[in-house]
Length: 295
Length: 250
Image 1: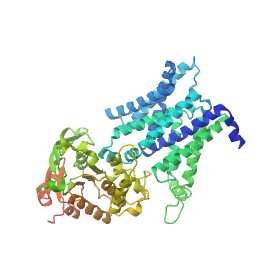
Image 2: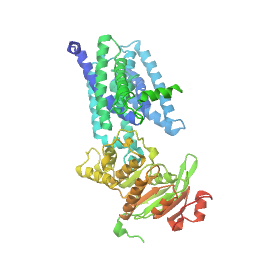
Image 3: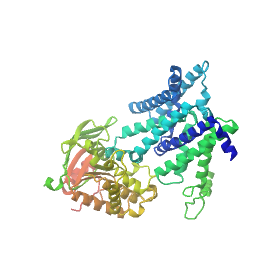
Image 4: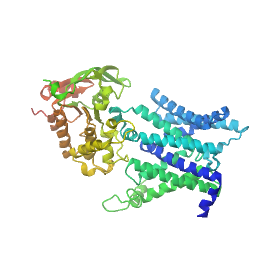
C-alpha cells in the first residue's frame, strides 16, 4: 500500500487527488447525457473550442476558466446558428466550428507561449500533477454547480433526453433544457482541461457512461456506476502520471478504455464473450467471426 | 349534440392552419372544430400531413398562418394538459430506462420543477400501468419489450399525465392484436370520459369501425365527421387518388 499512500504526503498529490475525484465524477455524470443523446461529437467540439477563450483570458489577466467557458458556450451557439440558419447539417457545423476554434486557440497560445509561463501541452494533454490551489477551488465550485443542477433537473432532463417531442408536447421548455445541458457540458470540460486536456476529455465524458450502460439498466445507475468508473480511471491515471512521468490525460484515457474493454467482453447482459443470444447457444464471438469472414 | 356541462373540456378550434415544409406546402388552410367525447381518427395517405397536423396543433413545429385555440387560450400554452405519444420511430428504444421510468415521465410536469415524485404520483403511475396490463413488466428495460408492449407503456405514460387532450401518432404500427384491443378499449374509455382523443392512423381496414369520427386529410382537409359521412367514394378518390379499397361496413 505504500506506493499508493506515500505520494499523498505531498501537497501537490493531495490537490491532484481532489481534482481527479471531482473530474471523474462530473465528466461521467454529464457525459452520460451526451452518450444517450448521441451527441459524443458535441463533447469533442466544445472541448476543442475552449482554447482561444483560455488564451485570451490569460492575456487579459482574468481567470482562464471563465475565458474557456465563454469560448465553449460561444462555440455551441455558433454550431446551432449554422445548422438552423443554413442547409449545413449539424455534424458538419460542429466540424467547422471546433476545428476553427481549435486552430485559433493553438495559434494564440503558441504566440503568447514565447513570453509567458504557459504550456500548450498541459492544456492539450493534461497535467493533473500541476494543478494549483486556486484551480482546485474552481474545480470544486464547478463540480458543485454541475452536480446540483443535475440533481435538481434530473427528471426533466431524463424525459427530454428520452423523448424530446413528448416532453415538448407536455410543455417542458426543451430549448432551455438543451441550453442548460450545453452549459453543464462546457463547465465540465473547463474543469477537466487541466487533468485530461481538451483533446482527450471526450474519452472521460463518454467511456465511463458507455461502460456502465453495458452493465446496468437505468439511467441514474449509468450515471452512478459511470461516476465510480470515472473516479477509478482518473485516480489510476494520476498515479501512472506520477510514477511513469506520463501526461495525465493519456494515462487516464488508457485506464478507462481498458475498463470499457472488460465490460464489452464480459458484461453479463451483453458481453461479447459471456452473452449468447442465439437459441443454439452459440457464442457471439463465433457468430461475429463468421460474419467477419464475409467482409 | 354538445354537452359541456357534463364534460367541462372545451372543443379545440383549428383556424386557417397552414404549414410549410421547407419550400413545399405541407398543410393548406385547415379549419376544423374538435369536440370532446368522441374517438377521432386522422386518416390520409403517406405524406398527407397527418403527423404534421398534430405537431402543428401542439405548436411543436412553426406554422405559416393560423391559430389553434382550446377554450379561450392557444392550445400550445396549455400543454401541461396535453399527452402526446410520438411515432415509434421517434424513440431510441436502447435508452437505459425501465418501464417504470418511462411511465413516471408522465408525472414530471404535474410534479413540478425541483420536486421529487410524490406518493400519490407513484400511485397514479402504478394504476396507469395496471390499466394497460403491464404491471408485471415494471422493472424491465424498455428496449427488452415487444413493440406492442412498448406502445402500451407509452399509453400508460399518457394516462399517468391525467391529461384532457390526447394525441397518438400511429399507435398501431407494429403492435400485436392484444395491444390493439387494449388501445382501442382505453381510447374509447377516454372519449367516454369526455376527453379529446385524436389518433393518427393510416390503416383503412376493419379497425376503422372503432372510430366515432374521421378526419380525412391530404394536405388539405377533405372531410371531417362520422364514418358514413366521410367514407364516400368521392372523398376517398380525393384523398387517395382513385383505386383504394376500404372497409365499408356501416
